[in-house]
Length: 172
Image (tube, rainbow, N blue to C red; front, side, top):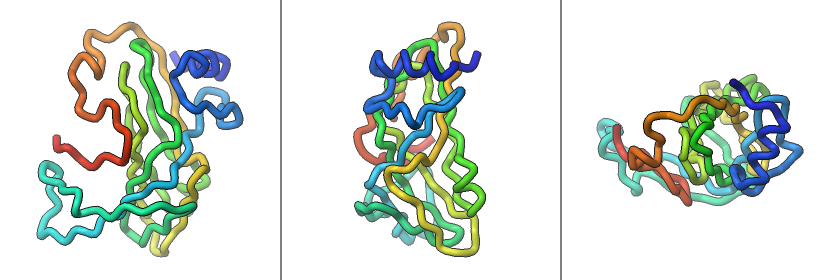
C-alpha cells in the first residue's frame, strides 16, 4: 500500500528523512533534493567493468549546479539522509521537469532498513549539454508499506548501507 503524505510526514518526524522539508512532500511521495557534491566519469579504460570500478575514474567537484554532457552521466548525492523502516520500501523515480529536457535520474529502490545518503546517477540522454541544480528536487521518492520481509537490506549485510558520500559501484 502506498503511503499518504500525512503518513510520510509522521515517519519523517521519527527520523526516516533528515533533514525533512515539508514543502518537498507531495500526495504520495517526497521530492529528494540534490546535494552540491558531484562526480564525473573521467576514466579511460578500454571497457567499463562494473566489478572493477576505481575512484580514480571519477573527479569530484562542488557546485550549485552541474552541466552534464550529451549522452553522458554524473553521480550526485541526496541532501537528505534516509533511514527506511523495516516495513517500508521506497522507489526513486525521475521528475518530469527534468525528463522533458533529457535528464533521467536512475530509478532505484531504497530497501527495508537501508540507511544513508542516496547516490544518484543522473544521465543526459539528450544531444545538448544540460544543467541540473543543487538543492532542487531531482527524484520523487514513493513510499510503499508492506508486510515485514523475511530479510531486510541490513539483515543481508547490504554493502551500500551507511553511505556518507557518493559511492561508486562495488560490483554486482
